[in-house]
Image (cartoon, rainbow, N blue to C red; front, side, top):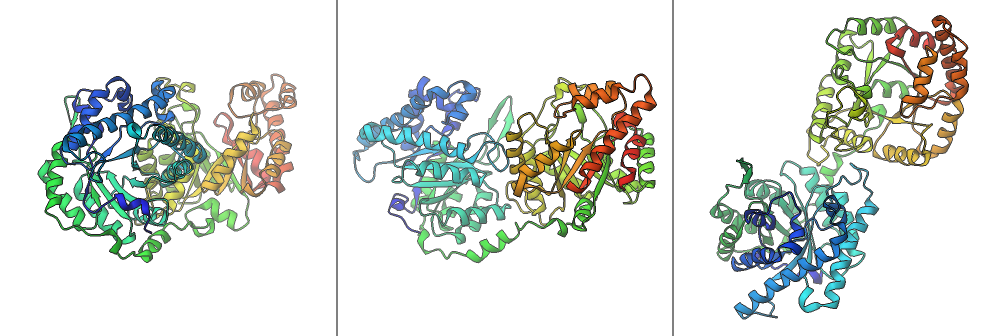
Amino acid sequence: MSSPRNSIFLPGTLFDGGLGTELYERGFYINRPFEELNLSAPADVESVHRDYLDSGAKFLTLNTFAATRVQLKEFDLDTKLPEIVEAAVRIANNARREFSAAKGSGGSKDSPRLAFSMGPLGVLVEPLGSFGLDEARREFADVAKIAAENAAKNPRTHAYDAYIFETFTNLSELEAAVDGVRSVDRERPIVASISVKSSQKDLIAKFAERFGSRDDVDALGLNCSEGPADLYATLKILRPLTTKAIIVQPNAGTPRHLNGRYFYMTSPDYMAKFAKRFVEAGATGVGGCCGTGPDHIRAMGLALKMTTVQSSGTARVETVAARDRAAEWKRLTLAERPASSIGESLAAGKKVHTVELIPPKGTDTTKFFEHVNLLAAAGVRHVNIPDGARAMTRVGSLHLAALVQNVTKGKVRAVPHFTTRDRNLIALQSDLLGAAVNGLGDVLIVTGDPPKLGNNRDASAVYDIDSIGLTYLVDCLNRGVTTQGEALGSRTGFGIGVAANPTAINLEVEKKRFRYKVESGADYAFTQPIFDPESFLRWRDDLGKNYIPHVVGIWPLISLRNAEFMANEVPGVSVPEWVVDEMEKAGDDPTEAVKRGTAIAVGVMEKLEKSCEGFCVSAPVGRAAVALDALRSFL
């Protein structure tokens, strides 16, 4: 939809190139935020702006891409945000004023425009991360408020013409950015730009659907990602989906690493060829992102002068295409996922009873499968397999789970735990796809114990996302897309299990996080070991509409030492004092201790059998027979 604000985005508008690239070329490295240079090296920042103006750019991007408190806090510069923003706008105005004076265009409509740049916050925002969307809106609103108030007080030295949100990959975060800025400034135009590959057709369609229909967004953008060839293919997909202006700013190809530095090899002539193709394909404005410099922009500007531009307002919007692509995102019900054995049982109204078995330390699985066979013979259909429990090196849960199902020919189905501790976003998705290929249909999502608890204390903890984000990630794969919206061509069918702790120290936080897990796609929950039935019943009642099927964790104690350890050294587990006292009565008799521990476990299950959907009994210290004795009467 047309807006009076978008009149500044004229067909054939030339934007500048990579600001960070040019500062890097001048010897400023990435061990400090480029935005800080507004204070410590203003002349260099202004010099970059002047070089781009001299190369023909009609739109300058301010040095504010990462100028948010959350980004600057990493360098202890968050308190400097107002100064950094003020300096960025002032520096760009100086460059524009001096350039216009030299060209004799000061104050005319031909004077270059200034775009206030905003990038992602650099933290994982909902739904992948725990940084709330409300917090994100406030971050962006605070920055816009500083800039807008300075412009109102000093229009000659602190004016700017538009906002450009660059390099976003999370559409929810981009919406938060737009909403935040619009809460304090409804006058200046907004360009909403994403970094996306042409293969991510679903994300492109969603982008057009969510931002093409917003009256308060004046232009859409495609920037960064890869080189001009792929961005051209992306433009060809986006252009039919919106009548809004589209700004295209590709990288100068893919960088090469040499002697500790990165080099972009794409030539100005190559960029110029694509500048022509961009506008012929319907782009309103073109410029550059990473790796592009004044020479690239100069060449692109010359190419634009010899190109017939197309008005964006004449494009036919293919809303059906967007709807069809969006339909691929439909979430299947648990009953519609036949790979999920847990889901099959729950859909049939059956109880889910499982035993948790610790993976072996080495490659000898003989003892492990003796336990599996013992359980299978007694009618146990599921086994849970922890993923590096207590941060100890053991056989991987996904590999062992697939082996269990293969060896037992599906008689025993495995529920592998899956942690965010050891894998980045790429590995998380790849490993889960591999698990699906290997026939796994259920996964229990956990954040994972920190490495310092285990036997590899120097190991790094990845934690790109937490268990809430991982829940969303698995839900994405179940809908046939990656977290970036790239279509997979097929979908996984995982039953998504999540952890719950009814005895958490801060129950309000635990309930809030659990609600987020449910909203992110959780199908069922496994609790921490429960020794006090009332704690679970209170938890169930408190969850209300957020309750999903719960498999209650049970731990048959085998000694007083075991009870004391669980009570004092296992995070997230609450053992009432009466339980410890009961185990103490066994004295030094190990048989009596196991008997009492089993009786306590059975007592908890008897009280909760009608209030939950099943039990997960842990095999204490690897003793599967003890777990089976506790569970036997419920099978």
